[in-house]
Amino acid sequence: MGKRKKRKHETQQRNQPVSAPTQSKRPLLKEAGFWTAILFLLSLGFPIVFPDTGSAPTVYLGWGFWGLTLVLFLVAIHQHSVMPLWVMVGCSLVALAAFLWIARRSISYRLRPSFVYMVPGVVLNGDTWDFIANHRGPKSSQAVQVLFIDNDRKDYLRSTQRELSVADLNSYQIIWNLPEVNPMGHGSIFAQQLLWKPFSLEHSHFSAEITWRDGSVHEEIEIAKIQDKWQYSMTVTDRDTSTTLLSCRDAGLASGEALAPCFPGFTQPGI
Picture 1: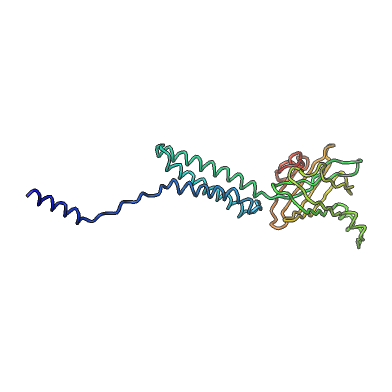
Picture 2: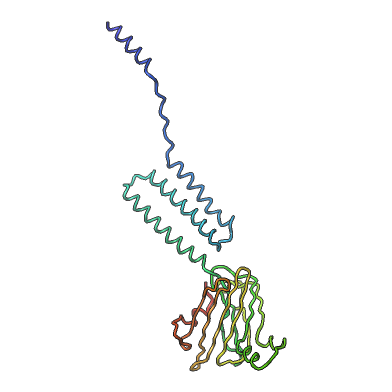
């Protein structure tokens, strides 16, 4: 009887379906680590392939690559880490918050408008203003052209003469060409200057139409000598969008609207 039971047991074992050995799943760490490396290389090469870093879609897409890289990196660390879950979640939230803060500052800086504007420098020979081409924004402005107008002389001529000659036009306006104006005045040893003898030195009104390769602005300048001190007022407006890019007024030219003083902040090179 013992042999019969043994043979029956062996027969039952042979008749049982044999399950295929379970295949081990590929660790997510390997996949996340692989795609982290791929996205990291793409993020590094993105500015080389798309060098126009001032374009909004390019800036957002570039930071999107860095964001995905960080997320996959955190996933890979989580799969490999032995830290408690609450510690890992806390560290991940801190890393994401720091990334978003850095990205926001970088995006807002890189998408700032870049533009050229004129600022009064010093009075030379007691009757001539030395105007300087200034710049704001992270991108250099190339192929700059400035139509500078003495509004006081223009208004006087138009009110006293029926017709204006070419000499009259040239007496109140001038076209100034600049190959490039850089942030912080880089690229030139000396500031790029325009000398102009105003129609009314003690209280002058000027305007400028400024264009460059990828933009244009309109500027209004007022200069007055008040209590032996020069006071400035400047307003720069984007000609395409009518957005005010810069507006300042020194205390001596007070008005109903409170504005930041022009001197020294807006008369100095800056980005």
